[in-house]
Length: 397
Ligand SMILES: *Cc1c(COP(=O)(O)O)cnc(C)c1O
Image (cartoon, rainbow, N blue to C red; front, side, top):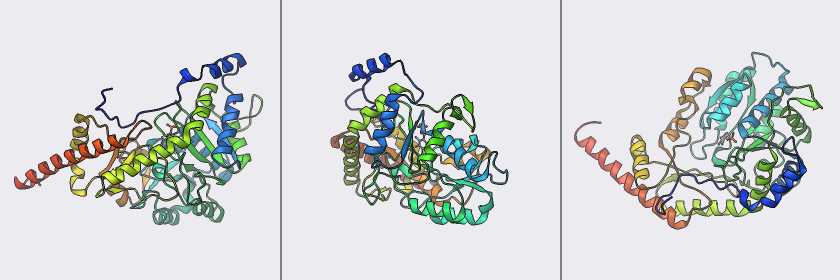
């Protein structure tokens, strides 16, 4: 790509060409999948290096399948299998990725979409409480999303699970690298399954992959059997199952990524700091916790420019800067989810999603490029502002 182009995301999975000896080792072993030795080492090193050695980890072929497994397991364990039809809702925020709603739907549940907090963009506790009050006897599982790698109050969700008996599954797809206020990796010690993505566009980049962490090894054992066709005993299905296994080559890439991950996270933190310094008047997500994993840099357009977001994104593209609008549309705006989900009050989600603009981030990005993005953004906004002003003058608004 030309030096002047700054893509929105630039995947950086470990180079297979640097791993030729290890690849030859996999070939010599004759084991390519089915929780093989490389995968086992990767799971153990993730537990020991990221989660302080406690609990257990399970790889999956992607986080979406991981969410399906964990939701299905949580619901079957708590409500029986098949679960009662009146327990039909999976409570989740509307401001998240399509995968989370799809996962609940594949489990036979109806996503019940709640609002987010105005500043942190994580699920609003008040909104969740309100929907729990209204639909308590119909909610089968709660699936909060740790928005863009922000920290969640996991103790609050644990209280919900223990006091109200409603199981919890944490969507932490973009949270590998996040440290909570105690400086521990997000999810550490959590007795409910926490699902991370190892997709190539996420900071912990492999090709396709996911990781489930849980402090309870029995939950991981059950999820592992479910991910292998429901075989708790060899070739005998004793629980719901599918094929969720990660292959040995991707596990090898995971081990390589783990070796450089501190550096990846620190670099992305520095890029995020540079954005905040370059765009002092802009509104960003309020971050909770000691450190954050950044997949991209989310910012809010000034309210008066929100309706010009599409031309602003096009203007940025013309200047060689890639940008996205995650998560706009939010779930309740997707045609399929409008037919299949139920929504609570979503006023804050609407306000945030309408203004959100996601700016470039990658392992390769430099502070100089952040300045270039900020300049390009100011130019695009000035041009959109001029259009806005002109349309006021000619009475279009
Ligand atoms: C990336 C992402 C997923 C899906 O992860 P995959 O590994 O690609 O399946 C799910 N939920 C959220 C919020 C995500 O950002």
